Image (cartoon, rainbow, N blue to C red; front, side, top):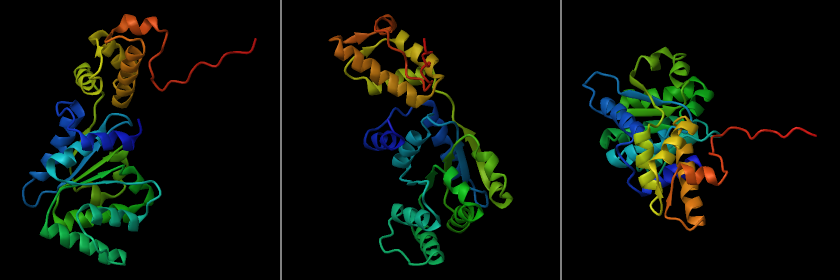
Length: 256
């Protein structure tokens, strides 16, 4: 499952709100949203790839009515501004970057909504000007901004002191627990009963990486359906001789 599919599915279906990283991401945004006058309202939610941060971001966006922008690797400042403008409902965009930025700020002053920026790491690669765009929106529109990225994001932002000192809260995403995986099992495996012992083995094998847990749960369901079964447990899975999808490279067979 790609990141885009992961996010798209969460936008169309109400995901389990009890998942650890959904609660952590939502708490981060709410702390920024509820900050008092004069307080910064920038938040960071960061962690390794596959922890479900984008899934959480899409769910937070749907719950709070936040504008949600997923930064693409080939974008530059203009593309970023256009994406924000369209997300907050601006139909006719100003032609120059400075005017478009002013247009975004004016719109947010009239209709203040939270802003979520996913894949923020791409912005860092462009340098300080991209970071300053976020600071300009935050300082002038006074809306809460949640930035989502990889685990090195907080350290990277230290290079821009005027930006870094506006960060109200930085919170790390966590590996999925067995409780999370059981919720994901109930959500992604409606056609087959995947037993708890198999779910626990999946969590251990994947080291709690949410995306890989989902992949293995779906494979377990497909394996049971293919065998004409309506349940599957760890012994059944082991009996197939299959391995869990963990991202580890398959061993290379040595030449005879």
